[in-house]
Length: 590
Image (cartoon, rainbow, N blue to C red; front, side, top):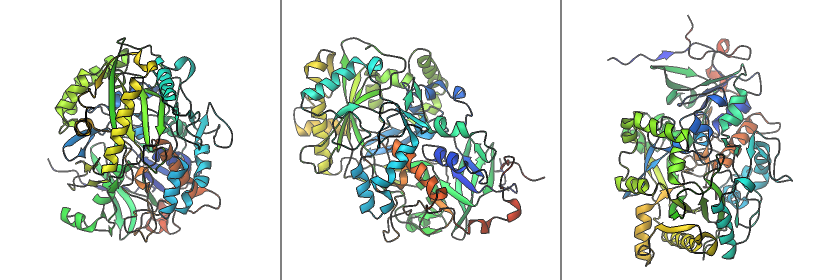
């Protein structure tokens, strides 16, 4: 069958095209469209919903991670090589709200020391003092007030204490205190790391994604158009200027033109699109047959994430008491590894729901999740292609187990993303290079052994029938433990730094500190790929903050205006949209 010809859309051009409606993209589209004179078009590869009630149950319910199961229609289900020997399924959200729609609603901020590193990398606009107002702007903290917290933002932040607290959470906190760790009452306030409740962007069991917090409330604005199920294939350039995108929608390809293009496709999608469009390492692009628009050696390099290991155990009762609004994690221990000069470089999270509960949900949600998987066996098998079958069988065998999640928050090892085809539907290769540095291996050994020590304390021991992994033989020596770790390694799915920000003098910097792509005009990247260094603790709250900052860079009083003054030179004046009824960017002029 002959491919359909691309059509050049002659409808009015938007002022801004945002590619990706995830943690940063939904924020940007919502904030930029607050100006009724600015037209914004948001393109999202997954489905779009204009009401919370229409979201799938597993997307709404914070206790379900069913959408993160390989093969789920709202999951990109990439595959990554955590080590050269170990592949792993890497879920990413394919729906409005992006990965904030399918994650565990962990909502911890980065610590001030993280931003010190950003500044040292040449980004003086990113000190903690300068980002704090944007953390406050986005949040509605239901537990804490004062100068470090916001109470009027779109994202509710709540800790699950009181009636929602699991007996496992209470025992974990008591165990950490018994081992001498200090209490950290507010994990979103600067201070020493310790044991405390996890801030969650969830209220009454609802996972408040950026779609729920930002995009759906803005859906009726006449100057905001959200197009779901729209796959962007590449950025269109005229010389070194980005003038639009080529996108697939409803079985056809279209060229859509706009004054400014903002990539918010995530730490995998954004570098992938840049390279397919000719912005990336020139030698790699030429080897693929891609025309080089700008040689950017740093695109796809420096991939960073948090390595993770699960220490699992079987509770004395098959089902610990749970509440329908309970999230997977309620408490976390953040601490500094022995011999480390990085404060708070380790984390142990206490999981309170079993592997079976979080992947299939509970009650009717569980039945729906299982039915969905049975209805899409081919898609599921394709999604787990290359993933260790032994690993999947082990997880199925331990589906009733609970876990302590051991995470390295500042690893030294770095990976990369490699584009292997000019077909945009062919996923890039992800090489994490985990535990390649001896210091990373040593810190993870310490963390696993600490987790097993916590399980032996009196508060937790009375709840536990048996530790299931690692076993005593795995812990008998460093060599045995290293083998267990390399076999059971996982990832926190916190990837970043594949389009890192930095000054033009840094040859590996892809964007400047205001998100403008070096070497081209009218193109920005705003998502975790722009982080110059991975933050301690999960990056989702920081990604949303980056979206808020980017919007203010573009519109805020006295801020740097990222909408270039000459962006409109490439757009005929007669087709610019300046307000009024929402244009249909997909309908050709008759």
